[in-house]
Length: 212
Image (cartoon, rainbow, N blue to C red; front, side):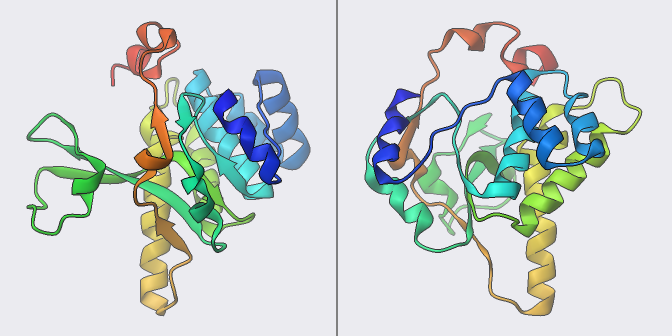
């Protein structure tokens, strides 16, 4: 996480939350439905998913996971305009693994057996972006349903954000408006995800708890 502290020299404020400060933030900045939904997030990953939507919708800014290490100054391109910036990913079903980022943009590859979506890390956003509003509202509605164990990916995670983005993009297409979002190219040249962290081997890793 310390790799991101050099952004302070560029006018950023680096902020981190724990469960208590996240609860206070949502209680103070949002409504009773949102705080009730947050308190139904059983796993820390869900609470982090939900909190980032609340903070970025309210204030805008840049969210990155704590296992992302900043490499160089390529992050500046994320703020060259006020569009929402999201990272595209693709799971290759036939290969049983993630597709290299460079291959996502190739038009010569067959579309079948590939699952395209957007990650919820990183997110660079202006405040009150409609995709984040839609994603937060959808996550809130799903969390407040009478379900004992809501699924993480589609409720608060990348699946939820992808659904919100697709609905928003379709509406913009119907109305002929200019896109107010952009898919990030080359995030892996800006930051590197570190997988060799202890939490990935125990219940702190949501994949181990939810079998994903």
